[in-house]
Length: 219
Image (cartoon, rainbow, N blue to C red; front, side, top):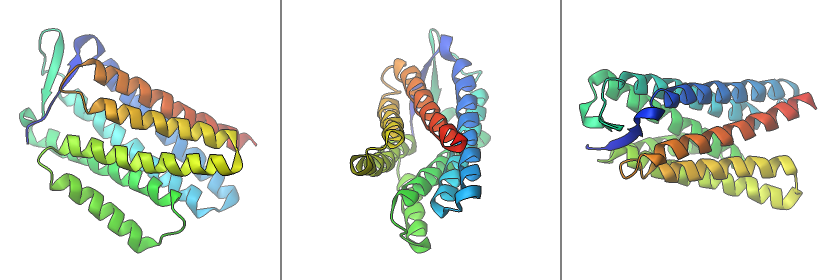
């Protein structure tokens, strides 16, 4: 497996801070989802919270992994090669991918109409198998993320067209931004601006989701 991505020197450090912020925001999304579930007792809301809790944990791992790479510096930017990672770095990378993927699959599962536990098991297994069997795991992970998030986006937008709920539209916009960020991350080895743009898109997406949940709790 040989994969590299570029990080501008001026952004290195900011990216770790933003990833920690993503972890905190997605954790808060999970907390508010659990609060709503404590009132409504809706299983889907509970699973929504579990999905974002897994995503939150993945960002904590990802921030730690990038901190691990602090010493790998080049002139003007940092070129991170996965082949240069030590065993701890690889374990962290795979932990991030696994947690994030299971989190996304959980959100996809939530958007389906009660498919059952066996379906969830197959969805998780196939998703992880796709990445594990790939030579270029980061690229496969991003493509799989685009596919999964696109499905979530489709389901929320479909729901908006039926109910014309403004909050549903904002959630759709949030997942659309996540799709764009993952598409952008596919070009990390080509131009370093992709790393910055991807982080900004993610931040906007998670803030939209958090604000919507906070408004739901207040009501």
